[in-house]
Length: 124
Image 1: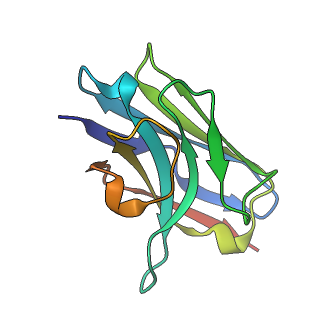
Image 2: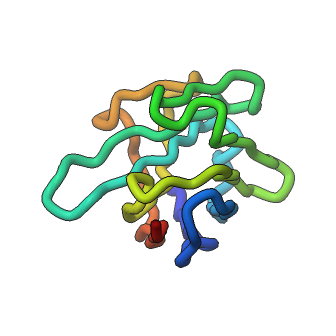
């Protein structure tokens, strides 16, 4: 069993930065891939970024490439999403999720554990 808790969301002006954190519990967390997703009310939840079990392989949605960076620290059981050059269209609730599949992947159905989400609001 893995439990995830996100933090770091908030209100920021366009062009600013935020770092989201995802704190995990569970003995096997270091063997799980982790993804960050985001959801706007009334729309589907979309992948933002994913990282494999070791942190050595990552995936980014085209909309965030070059602006967001996902990383993890397995010793601390933490996963981060550094978000730079934020845009109003990045406004959403951001979720981290863990998958028993060890590679970085985008299939939302294969993410087994989810956090409660953290709100990110980017003002223009």
